[in-house]
Image 1 (cartoon, rainbow, N blue to C red):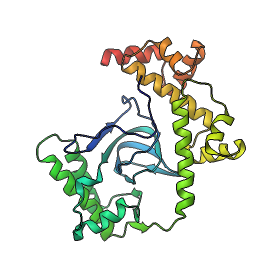
Image 2: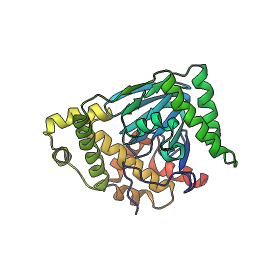
Image 3: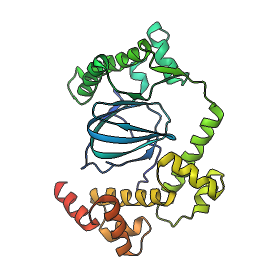
Image 4: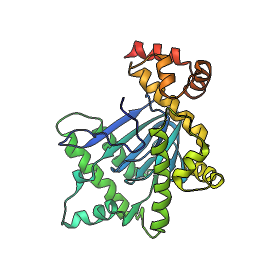
Length: 286
């Protein structure tokens, strides 16, 4: 059984054009975006409703047409509110012109010397770029990759022209230490998703006292540690059933629950329906 990881390592797009486009609505198995990170930058826009996005230890509320840029390696997760949202995750190499003048700003972004603003409430200029970019990214025609690259470069040109960026002058050692602690905890939780972990188990991974760890974890995720672990267990069980890999009882056991009734109560709490109903409805749609 393949383990879900908070560090995403899946291939984006194709070898010749490594860019992934994802449209996410309530039918998507990861509608509630769990905390994760990846080495590629990402752009997210809200098409409908609103999205509460957590970036490291900050929170942003996104409304329709709002745009977010997420740098490589940044921990992020989101809770939708009747939302439909779209994501573009891309290998920065598709827009690089190394050693030429037009690559200077993009190179600074990718090397973390410059940090574009995370949040954009688009003006007319950016709205045109945003619409063109996401429209082309969702297209499979032969002209789409060239168009996507052009709009990505226009996005970074917009950031540079309008000074929508900052120099990275924060405490790098402290910032990377905190992020590293959190990433280690998330990986540990996923590696031991079928076990009954204690607060002492996970706080030890972060190298923090249990009391401080509780504040630290909630600051990053907006959830208590046990709430987050239960959420991840239910998400994994849902994904297994959605893919038709197991029965309800097998999914329950795989995420560490021997008490079927307790598993059912938690599943209904996080997924909005019973596991049996969830499995049946998605089996019919698959």
